[in-house]
Amino acid sequence: MFKSIHYQKTDPGLRWNKDSGIAIDSGRGLEADRALTPNVIKIDGGYRMYYHGLGPGSILGILSAFSADTAQWEFEPGIRLPAGGEWATQCIWSPDVIPLPDGGYRMYFEGKWQDADDGVRSAIVSAVSGDGLVWEQEPGARLGGENGSYGAPRCLYLDPGPDGRDLRYRLYASDFEAHQIVSAKSDDGLQFELEPGVCISREKKLESYEVYAPEVLRLGSGGYRMYYAGWVPAPEVPAGSKFHGRIFSAFSEDGLQWLKDPDVCLDNGGPWDTVKASEPCIIDLADGRFRMFYEACDLEGRWRIASATSDSALRPQ
Image (cartoon, rainbow, N blue to C red; front, top):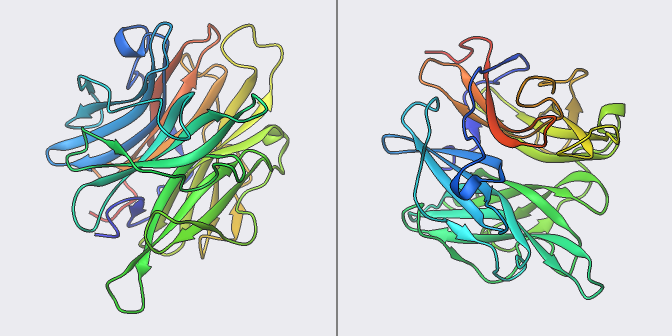
């Protein structure tokens, strides 16, 4: 079971073709203003996407949609989790859902809250669900709170513990104060302790403002693949975003020391992502290819969830 999430038999690779359609559009209903931060998991009969929706004049929270094939998505009624809980009074987004050993699910997500100096900070908090639709926030912060500002989580199961049964967790997150991607480890999925070192720092010109939103896959072929967003200031953009965003990649043998790939993995510049391609999420397809869902912003400032598909069937059939 610990291999059922953020795990692929082989590396999805570096070559992606943008799909012609939009996965989740904005401009209607609960996503009237924005649809952001996708996270896709497999469920019985298909796939479920969790994402942040922003309606007119309101901060909503986490929504969901269902698809039998990852190509056509149907909105699921209701709000999975609204903003307003502990450490999440201002906003919640960037969901990451994992199955639990005893059944049900845990969602890690970024909550924004206002500190004593009236500044908005971020913490990683969590919620649990028996069916993936009705969620209850858990008390406390998994990472951050009064200590630092962290967001955009991805949680992986590591190998079973020494007794062969206990599972360990590694949480990757964006450290907004240091502008880098870090990791933390936990024995229970609730109490996380930062690991030494930095996974990804700002080294390239096109990531000079921020490295952000890691999507990390543990590979059956060995090692780990990370896709992440790199942002650079873009003051000339007339609407939508003050930054250009692109998706980059890196590889690691141990999940801690990362070697960046030299080129952009998925560039901005298409009709949906003229300004920004960010917040990647990867799922494998039935034909052996992979699909990347990501947050896209165009020149008019419209935010949608778009997708790209890997070049060929890389996994053994």
